[in-house]
Image (cartoon, rainbow, N blue to C red; front, top):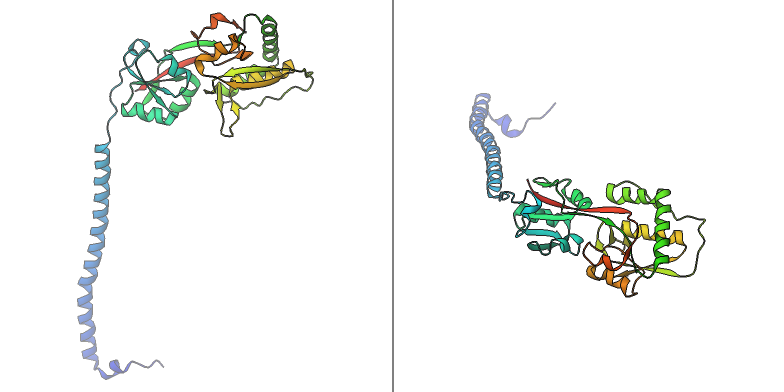
Amino acid sequence: MVKKPAILTAMRKPALFAVLRAVSRLRKPMLQSEQTFRVNTVFLTAALSLLLILTLNGCKAKAPPNTVDSLEDLPGKTIGALSGSPSARLVDDMGTVRLFADGEEMISSLLAGNVDCLVAESTFAEEITLDASGVRILDETLLEYDISYAVARENKTLLAAVNNALTELDRNGTLEGLRDKYYMGERYEYVPPENIAKHPGSLILAIAPDTPPNSFIGADGEYEGIDIDISRALCDYLGVELIIEEFQAGELITAVRYGKADLALDWLPGDGEELVNLSNSYAQISQSIIVRR
């Protein structure tokens, strides 16, 4: 048998019921007030959240209208390009050039209206605009040109050897595989041949290592890019060691002419290519123009 508390035992039943009814009447408004407070708090929080969203959207600067619809619109404009890239050199005399460290910074600046357009190598342009809304690539390109080795005019033997190697690399699929890897994003790994005889000597390749996807320095500090891999394959075929030397972009042709390098890549049309011999082409480069929608 459960023993009742003394206070309840001492109280008469009518009095006890009266107290309980009074407590019940007192608690009911309190519960209602608490529930009302909770409901009001929920609605207030939702309203403040909506107000914050609307305020932020209202404060967000709208991108200015596009002012570049064709190549003819470039002169006098503010043009963005990757620092050290061929793109930056190509537009140097077209307008005001702003240089950026990476593609994300380039796109952000374009959308903010800090530049009128961007110029970038086509593969890189497609990469940085893939997930970027509010931008597009013009159908008209700034420039298209072939990639060839620059070889000193007096070194016709080397020119012939390079062309023979490029022909074989094209025949066995190496050139196509490397083009697909760097320009199309396909999986391909170059495997050095086992049946090529090694010869004493080396070839010095002059590059400007800030021209992705042609020549650049990877995260591990090693040289990478289609120019690097094709040059390694070329030297493997010839059986000689590849030595890579860095030069300023405008000094690549000069390095070959004056014997500082045997071969040069990453040069641009107008760098003095008429002063050297050029090998067969193994790829084509195009420079794209990125604008706001």
